[in-house]
View 1 (cartoon, one colour):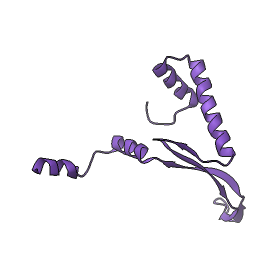
View 2 (view 1 turned 90 degrees about the vertical axis):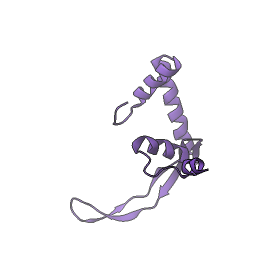
View 3 (view 1 turned 135 degrees about the horizontal axis):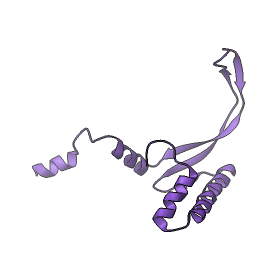
Length: 114
């Protein structure tokens, strides 16, 4: 996959290729998963996906802000939102692909001295 965003259809196509399902069945599966995730978060529950991360529903109070176009003060209304906290494993996997290891692993240095 190239850089950019991944659509639900592209995700369904990937699942179809890997598991041998039809694209239509894979799309239903993806839609069902996202639907259940949305229901859980709408009910106020935290959604934890092991080895991936945790989605937490949040309520943000109304607050003062400034309209960037006019500079006028405004009130930003209260709203519900979701935060995502990636698991340590996901962070490690994402960072491993993006940059080479800068410092050598100390364990491997100790083993070679030993």
